[in-house]
Length: 413
Image 1 (tube, rainbow, N blue to C red):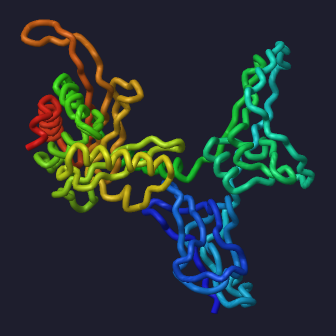
Image 2 (cartoon, rainbow, N blue to C red):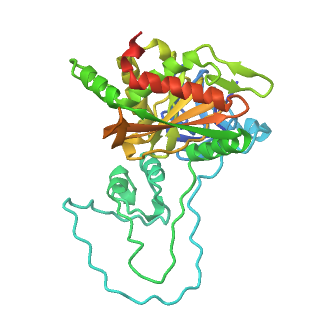
């Protein structure tokens, strides 16, 4: 008997998914555990395996299309079985949302621009792909090309295809150069791009956090001279390399053990005091921000933390993170120091009660023993949910964190 396979909920924040690639086609026999498709969620592209056996009778979501969770993804059954009645009887939300396309630019009346000679672009040093004709009148592109174009914010219809019959392939997206928007003056222009699944969830979660959790902020300056010396000594060991961020993560883990109020979360009816330390590390990716979690951080060595953070960062960039990788944080760290930012404040990653914003190390004059000398100072800003953490509790945590960073040897106890 035919059975419906529905769009799975692959993360706690997922409301819809996009089929990045089908690994089976209609008519193929399917065994339990076979890879059916790759589904792009708000956080990653994940492989979806079949829990049923049968023949693939119907595909409900084509490659590149988006569907709500629980919509019909596919139908499996016996060869030749009629699925029309199943499709007609289904009363779940709309099966397939049309692939979002950039809205057309609204035409506005503007003064006739004065034509200014524009220098011809310099020819590329590599040979351009040979473009073939597509006379069908519709855009034909490979699933990979569609996905790459969406990630880069490009309108796939504006890219010329060099594949068979004018089909747009990966090479065409990689080599595409958008026309300059500054070729004329006195003319308003803009482009629009569809909001990705990840960006939608980021927007919703950050708005919920900012407008529901009463934020307040605490700042502290840390003398990093000893930390710089300690890191240099550690990295002198064979096959060892730790970053300043690794030192901050380790110091936070140690400080959170002493300040459980900061290692807490607001749960509406209760405040949860976590007795374990799971630190989320904000990682920037092309389409937004992901927060993989280093679990039981306080029990791990500096080199262990360093290796795990590097692994998660690479998985995040490759869209290979699994739900278990980003769930369960008790505290979050966001570090923009490597981007040249001196200091900033961050929005709390709910339900965590706090997030630490880490700036870069600045070489500035400081006063030591009554003398003005060169110093290395790092600014830390702690965002706190006032429903859980009060000013004195947050200040005590920051001072303990400062002590660990200014005396790295104490983290070895």
